[in-house]
Image 1 (cartoon, rainbow, N blue to C red):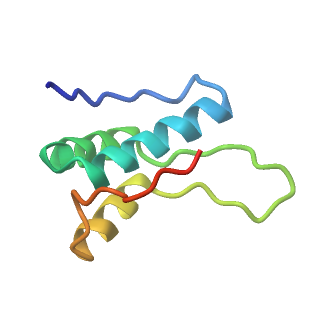
Image 2 (image 1 turned 30 degrees about the vertical axis):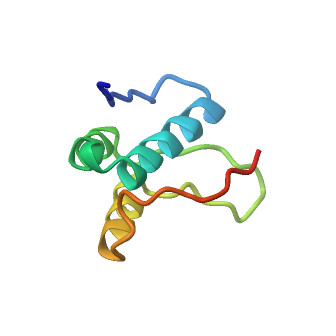
Image 3 (image 1 turned 90 degrees about the horizontal axis):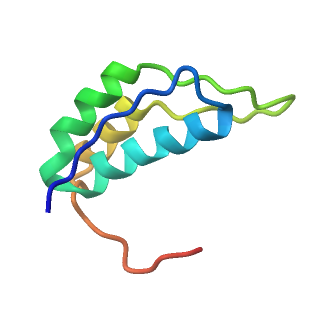
Length: 84
């Protein structure tokens, strides 16, 4: 199975950009063979900004999130339960 990761977010609406950012984080954190490729794509995308209104919510940095998971030794681990 081939996993391709390519994300381009800038002209997309806020919700789409946030989902793309989350996808890159998920692939980089959970799919070990695509860890390095996801980090490269995260650097290409850069900082994702989205209008969150008058809230304290922040958009997570995909590069920092992927590196944090790798540093903790959890890269490639799958979740036991899925919540929908």
